[in-house]
Length: 87
Image (cartoon, rainbow, N blue to C red; front, side):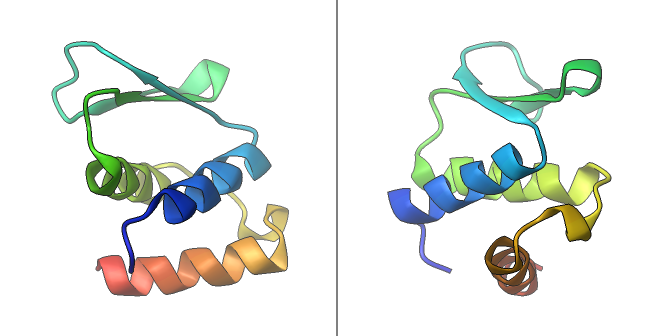
């Protein structure tokens, strides 16, 4: 996996397809992020670099429940590829 702005944008697009909002803000997060389930918002530490943001978003995707069928074919294929390389 390449840790680039393009990869980050693709991950943000997946969250958009899942009706989640990704926000980058400062805060006292124990793990670098928090998920506001009732509002479908993922808040990531804004001081993270691109690689940390990507890893954090992948971690969040592993923790939330969603139906892969809601994603486009391209997003689903990309996500499965990333998950294999991230494990």
